[in-house]
Image 1 (spheres, helix red, strand yellow):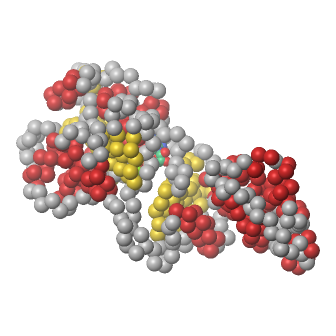
Image 2 (image 1 turned 90 degrees about the horizontal axis):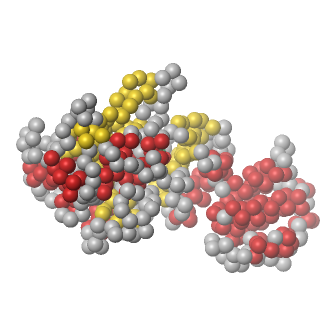
Image 3 (image 1 turned 30 degrees about the vertical axis):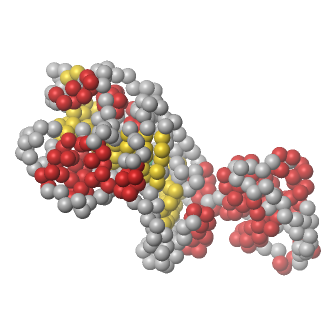
Length: 483
Ligand SMILES: Nc1ncnc2c1ncn2[C@@H]1O[C@H](COP(=O)(O)OP(=O)(O)O)[C@@H](O)[C@H]1O
Ligand SMILES: [Mg+2]
């Protein structure tokens, strides 16, 4: 092939010259010194897919290195790269049996700038998560359900190559010394990789894709994750600046609900600061400051914890603090903030039940090294936390709010001073499972008087207080946007 292939390609597509924001301006680096590939002797010609990929990769690297980065993000550049590769395959007569040229160039593009064998699933908008358990087993999650898919990597090496290619641009590496990595890709997706000796099944790669749009309370209602009265109540609670803890297990939908609740915060009059280990929240408001913690580097230095960020955020004049997940000493600062002028703050806690979430917060504060007596911690939790919203992931893959509990504010309430207790005001009642495997149930309000402090807070904020009816449920008249 003549070295001018890319240039000829460019002449046909004048838009190629226009540098995309992610491309370095110089697209072509013609190398006159390179030998004429047309004279390549027959036996040198790669005949396996791997060989062709290696060869093409080398050519892309010399002819149009900028495309290697830009084609990852830009659909147009990906097309340009594919056209370049397709021509290269023709000009150098590179073929493999059983694959059309188009399929081959697509596969090469996937390997060179995409996610190799799992590229289709990464690009498939119906797939939320891709899990690779060693080279031979790939699973995807669609609509909450796991399924195994055909894709496979050739061997550990092939999978490791992909992992390296994904994490290297993030300044992370994976080797014997640090055999796992958890990071966020530029598009917001989360990637986790773990290799031997920690993984016994070969390299394991988990990619949780960043949703194209985040779910609102209305979307969650349509999905059946909460009922209308519940959603209306939560929305009013956000406006009334209640402090909310969202609890649940991994993947129960905590972050999704946190994002939806935060979406109910009123416009630009409130300064929102979000703090996360791995930035997942995407708020519709414009006045949002997003902070992300930083793990230690390979020398073990430079760590910035959620707790440090939270301490700093308190000096940034926040109206609302949103902590992606509370899992350590930051619980101490979170309670302080909730108790002192930053009401209307939210966080999530990994817990098996709403009551467990409160117990965990107590424990986290105990471990925070502030030497507070237990009774003082209990008092702090009781006055700081107003609502606990617990999520569960059910057998049918659906994530639902299983409980909404209101904290008993009276010290020495139903069970004495040494524990913080909750009153359930909404729950999801399971009736059974249908023949198709769907969980059958409904959301209901629970027969309990709303505590006077809750009514007072709602009234003070001009919110309609939940109305409790004889047959049980609190009925909230507030409308949920988009519901
Ligand atoms: N109500 C829901 N129904 C179906 N899928 C959901 C629901 N809530 C969240 N998801 C999906 O479940 C996955 C995990 O949600 P996430 O909020 O990140 O969970 P957590 O923060 O509890 O680990 C995401 O892919 C998300 O899109
Ligand atoms: Mg989460």
